Amino acid sequence: MTKERNVSLTVPALPEYVDLVRLALYGIASKMKFSFEDIEDMKVAVSEACNNAVLHAYGGEDGKIEVQFLSEADELSITVRDFGRSFTLADNKESPSLHGKSIEEIQSGGLGLYLMQALMDRVEVQHEGGTKVVLTKKRMKSEETA
Amino acid sequence: MTKERNVSLTVPALPEYVDLVRLALYGIASKMKFSFEDIEDMKVAVSEACNNAVLHAYGGEDGKIEVQFLSEADELSITVRDFGRSFTLADNKESPSLHGKSIEEIQSGGLGLYLMQALMDRVEVQHEGGTKVVLTKKRMKSEETA
Amino acid sequence: MVTNKFTLRTENREGQTIVFVGGEFDLEVATQMRAAMEPLIELADRRLTLNLQDLKYIDSTGIGILISVVKARHARNAPFDVEHVPTHIRKLFDMTGITPFLAKAE
Amino acid sequence: MVTNKFTLRTENREGQTIVFVGGEFDLEVATQMRAAMEPLIELADRRLTLNLQDLKYIDSTGIGILISVVKARHARNAPFDVEHVPTHIRKLFDMTGITPFLAKAE
Ligand SMILES: Nc1ncnc2c1ncn2[C@@H]1O[C@H](COP(=O)(O)OP(=O)(O)O)[C@@H](O)[C@H]1O
Ligand SMILES: Nc1ncnc2c1ncn2[C@@H]1O[C@H](COP(=O)(O)OP(=O)(O)O)[C@@H](O)[C@H]1O
Image (cartoon, rainbow over all chains, first blue to last red):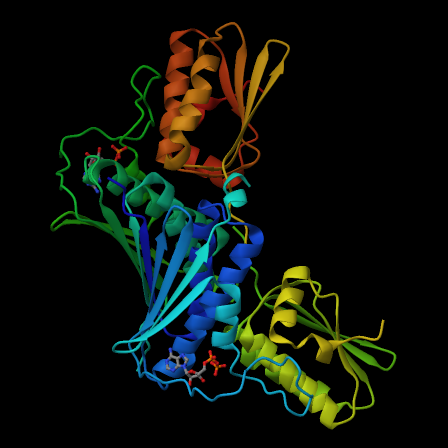
């Protein structure tokens, strides 16, 4: 029987608590022997998900963010949930990245989901009484002995 | 209305997860501007409570530890819960500390609760479907501006 | 255990203002950073430079603020650049596509 | 961000074995530490010293192991001491009362 390796962390949906999520991620990912670079990637992706919960989910009301870390043999899945209002992403929205745009066209904002996708191996967004973002990163074979 | 400042962390009751609890404690206590010394004291006390849950609560079976951090204006309360078997402390047990004992009398073990009490301002142990240890540390006025 | 507290320090040189940004530049410090940059953005006759050598962390919040600065300086026809970008931060700049807007004539 | 990984290093000098214990000496590393100390405890004709200068964290698990070493060395009539104890670790040693059993003739 494999032991359960699930860690969960619940914090208030406030800007000053997002670094606690990064600290926990750092502890867990180091334990799993992810590379420095992968850990930095995951830190950003997870923070983007948390920032969204802080900024968009609760419209200024109190709320919380629930983060679950699931360590498997060769990947780490991080689920970031809020219990606030949900949203739908416009399909026809132009790409939020700045590539190929002029200085007049670029805009601050809208990069969060784009970065999560660029930094993780898998990103799933579900809406069920709030927003649930599942971020997954595979660990390279070579990292095991790093 | 005061915002809720409750952080909770659940980890498997295994030795290698106790440092995650210390990491979270460090993040929260630094945010509250506790002194280095107070943070070190709390790290030890909280780890003692977690170690006990790892070692004594589940008798080798899978289990989990739930830690809640409640930040108030001038104190931090940390609740460490397990859902394992409970225990009663013998009243007539001699002091576990080594003070005034000879080298033949001293024994390793039994120092956990003693240290929690020595390091925190308040320690409460409750038994309700497992063990619940509430550890409280007051923050000195002088630490606010430290 | 060491976390990377956000640090901000401004240095005035001949015709140039250098802002040293260190530690974690995240949502928590966004307001502080915007407030610090606001008056400096207005000084159109001075070169404005961000030195990122001690920057440990940035995410879309910080990059969003950089984009605002880029646009505001451009609107004032005033020079802005970024120097000493650590490798893992550079990667995020490249990924989002902000890099060419931060270029420093080297 | 830096955590304090447990480190263990042994140095042999003329008639003395010095064990350098660093980082976090906690429940997670108890088995490793006991295994490392076991053979050294038997060398009764050599002075056994723990150098704690890089020790960042210890709790009752680590202190319990120190007590076992104290007793085992005493039973073998063999010298054991601890040196370079950081201040906040010394405080825990004083609190539990282990300090006099770790004394080094200085
Ligand atoms: N957790 C959430 N709750 C509610 N709305 C969200 C959430 N996450 C994202 N959104 C919506 O999706 C949009 C795009 O998010 P994102 O790509 O992260 O960019 P940004 O947050 O910078 O706008 C947000 O502006 C917001 O309207
Ligand atoms: N969470 C717990 N679950 C079950 N038993 C416990 C728990 N915490 C403490 N105990 C019991 O109380 C005793 C004393 O604990 P403590 O003072 O921490 O010393 P030690 O853990 O070194 O024995 C333990 O030996 C154990 O029998």
